Image: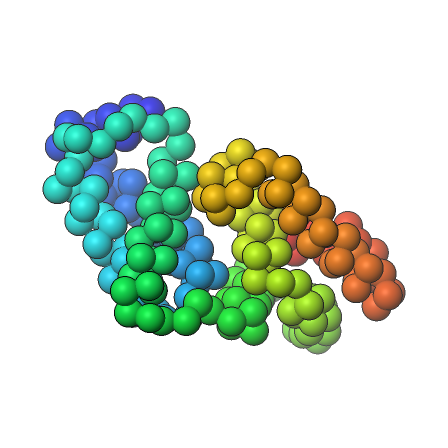
Length: 189
């Protein structure tokens, strides 16, 4: 990738562009791992400092986004272990997801949005933390199954099974509430 290689050669504009393109996604993903905002911000800052200082030794990549997400996840987990900080609860993960959704859908009629958001919160809240993470990585961050496999450090079949169980559980919950499942998937994309 040209942008990555230009950055590795020491181009500050390329480095700034990588940061600007990916900062929102990294913040959002960090909030799925922990609710400690300071830890997330520090981890992102450490990540970009490390990238800049070690740019000449970095390997090439086909996906800058994947590289950054994986690096951030590993950095946050190490910092959590070091500081003995508990990972984010399912309730906080859900609030962050819904916060992102409601921001994107503010232009919708508020009453309808409030009702739909409430129902979706309840449905996602019934998923396990890992199911919520796989749903976010697949549908919100648009990672491939192979990338999710590497990010979550699971084998391909386990990722497929986890995603299938999460979608099946969402489908059951949503259909019992009287919604159509494609409507729910429109929130996830």
